[in-house]
Length: 156
Image (cartoon, rainbow, N blue to C red; front, side, top):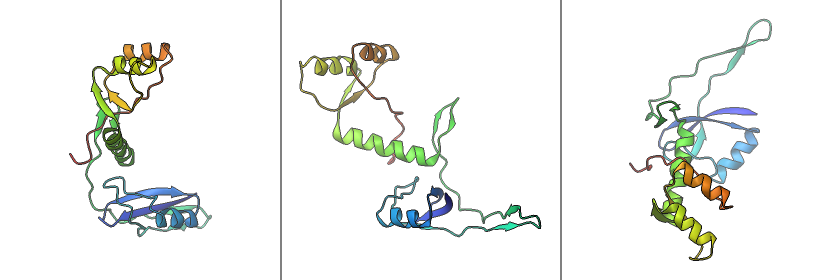
């Protein structure tokens, strides 16, 4: 595995791990490496500090230059602490896709899921709110649902 400091065309700095340099080059060329802050796929390797060996062959890390300040990641919950920027960006993209492709049914989520399961309404993608008890009841009835953390939208 190889660790790279990366930078997007908007000058957001972040890091990534890759199988080797060829893997990074291939993924970056196809737009599969994106900035966790803004989603930009124009990503390049940034200047990195080398590891210099001591006399006994043990590497001594040299501190890399300070990256420009970035927006602080959002807090998920008080007990969870800050969410890593890459996770936040992924969840924001997931939210955007769900909102674009599914119907919001609000607090009627459990009932709408049951109606679809029983064939009373057309099957379609839905999202909304359900209590822990409602989610457990749906699972007991054999109705599969997915839960994702509902983070603030990327556009504010």
